[in-house]
Image (cartoon, rainbow, N blue to C red; front, side, top):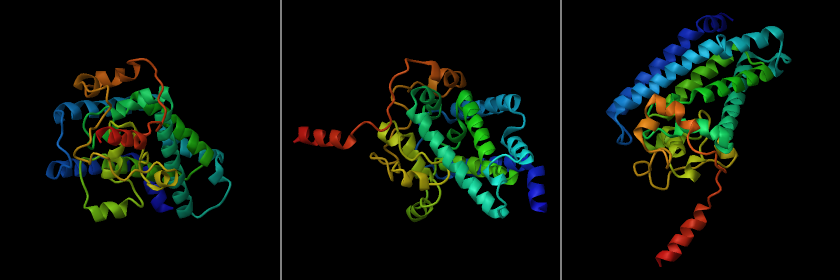
Length: 293
């Protein structure tokens, strides 16, 4: 109980310590051993990507002062949620919470790719022309608000221990920065880690301009959901150094890397059909091969 009380009382300090600590480690790693060469000024991207992060944080603090931890405390005090109906050992409740909330994040991620209106918001994350540690926290403000509301609903239905919600937030932020980093792992280590957590090479495929690659590897933390639901893709067809990052029709730096462009991006163009994984790449490649003969 003393450890739980310490975590709850120092929640903000713990989250910020992990955020800045992991961010610093990944940033240094990217400088020492980058996986890919960057195509846009790192200064421009970092100032604007991090500027959007701080802007989103400010907005969330105004709209939701208590954040997810406050909702968890409220649910616990009122006995709301499934885990409040059963007395489970704390460690089991924590594990259930982390796995369940990660699954909801996976479903949410698939949803924002499958629903055209939500894709317009989420494409701000994908429109980044490069892929590094700052990409992991770059989301449109409206998507961040939607994500927070989904998280609140999940907490109310699940009724997780407060400490479990804090740990999930720490793990989510840490792994999002890790697997969005411009780094590479030795093949054996990458292969082993992929059975449990999302690696940078695994998630980078998801940021390809090719739609079938974009619509794969939706997981942020655990890799199980992609493997279970058939959305796992091991490697990009063009290789990690040859693949193009971003979205085909958004290639201008001002609209993809400046904060004003990012905030306006969802409102550009008409709402068009966005059907997930409809392109038959195998058939296209077979047709191309036949035409080359």
